[in-house]
Length: 60
Image 1: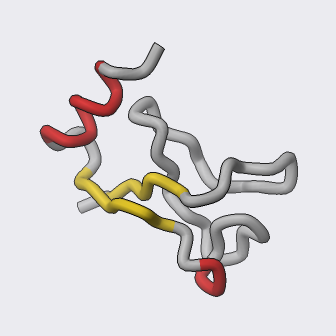
Image 2: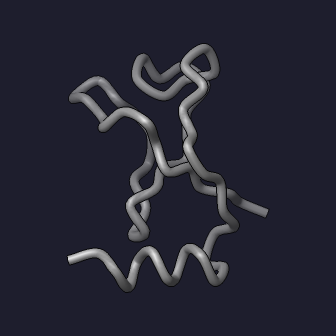
Image 3: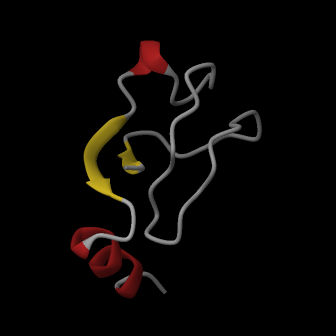
């Protein structure tokens, strides 16, 4: 199962984390913005699950 994270910090130009349609990311452990040492997530949810689809539908 792939999970996405809604990040605390917006990605910088150095961020290698893949962005998702829901506004989440898949954190890269070596990312300077969202890596393991940064505790990157406010919320985790399953890829293409109900929460992911609801977030994606609410984005402009």
